[in-house]
Length: 311
Image (tube, rainbow, N blue to C red; front, side, top):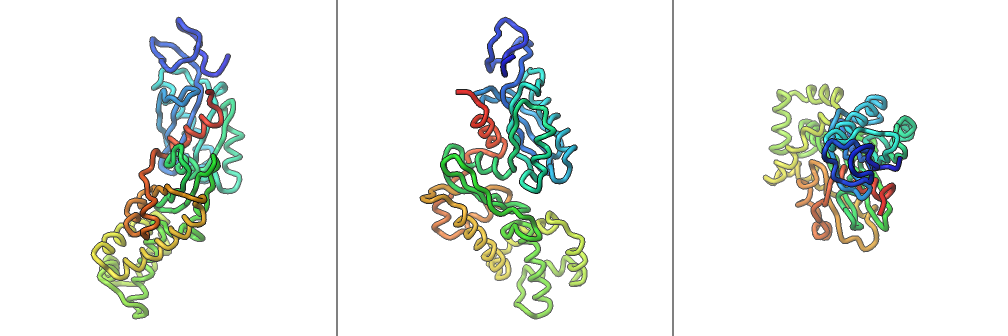
């Protein structure tokens, strides 16, 4: 049976109108998965969305088998919303997953997938593809972590995203860490403090040892929780906040310079910190900023159409 062919009903050819209780196999599957959940789309060969579904976390580095379970559950739910009986063995899938670019986790998942054909990419690759749509350009994904990418001539290149310990210099986690570091330096009289460092020290009961204890136990997201404070105080002209943001913006611009294709005229800033960072970029970069055209799930669907779709 060809992919997309109906198994019963008055017509035997594939089409996007799955009505009257027809049960049809699926053409294309797109999945965007991360640490908090995954989303799936079922589409026809041209990329028309037929159904959507969601399930639990799908970071393949954190939990490979759990990710597989949640991916298939989300696809099943998308199929049911579309009125389609899930037929994994005749479907073709593009999956964009957190952790897929680390070690061999993406390759290991690929061997376990039940689809007729599959590709596994990082969630960053799909986010860049979704944000830029049909255009060439560059994107910065700025949240708890940070990663940058560009699309040129159909090829997507990703840089950064090496994690809190060794990379992610413009991330929310690194902003929070820098703030706590500045607070300790100010307490010791090594650098000038500010209203921001005073507020942070007060939050830790004026005891720098409590900051150290927090830092020893904190995860990247815990450090990232301080990032909004940096932006809020920077708007008030706080010197320490301004210094921290200037350093981070320097990394953003250096990363964009490194990844941007020649003649780039489009840059998108994504993630929870994308828009907060935008006003602090230098004028040449601000002039290139464009709103994203889609998200990572849109990007995964575009990758599926490009790889497996039919004209």
